[in-house]
Length: 341
Ligand code: SF4
Image (cartoon, rainbow, N blue to C red; front, side, top):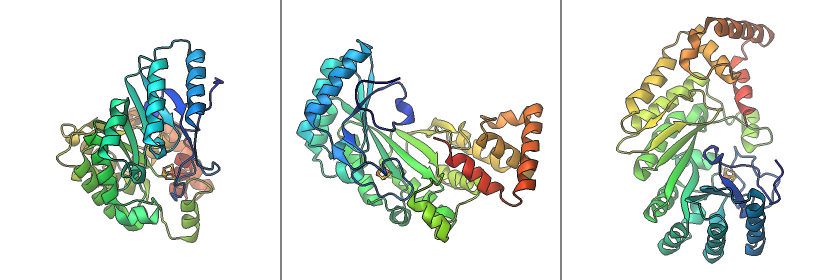
């Protein structure tokens, strides 16, 4: 579909049905080692007039489509002046009167520069949901991936957004600590999430992208990927340490191995742990079969292992990979998940 207004390259999975309006281009930081989303885009804040013109074009194009949600692209609308963002929000609601939720990505560093009153004004004007890519709660991991912020700033900014009335969704990335720091990554991420109690926790799994800084680290050996099993052990440890929070916890992306692991904390914590344990208890042949089946998109959930026809077809593929690339199956798993968009 060709839209008459400007669009950025990505949006959160949860915003699939939302109106998209671009307020900024790229990311003001653009240095995270794992991220290639805006590598070729110089960061800029679009002028209010440009954004208003796009809102008018979108309103004409969608011809009174009753959007109830809108996502502001790209990487950080909170980098805009609050007064400008308020004008945009007002204009958006005039043209799309059914909007109930307007959301944006926001960097912790941009949020902590806004006063409590500014965040409240933005929330009351309609910007009532924040997506924050915290990725990890470990200062060691945050430093290694050049996140440009700290665990304490993540907590402060998240609490400020929640205090202003915003719904808060935190992304975390499994496997980001690598072999060296996976336990620290799980433990410190759980600690930060326990302090924040976000409305939503969205889980992603690391897939190292070509051209990223993390790829260089893989090549020079300063970052070592965990096995798929170890990443699930990490997730189990993380879930086990989540306490006293009421977040909706979801493995929501195709890059996640166990997308059936989703539930409401604290009630579903035993269910989430049981899903991890069920995978971890598989014998080696079934674990390899399931992992390859998921990575090739043939399986959705652990119960799919009961389908003997699919199981045999995947086993055949597994044997082919093993004979062509002996000892490389984890590299193949990683390569398959890295290609997931
Ligand atoms: S802050 Fe977000 S968009 Fe910017 S480089 Fe890091 S991960 Fe990418």
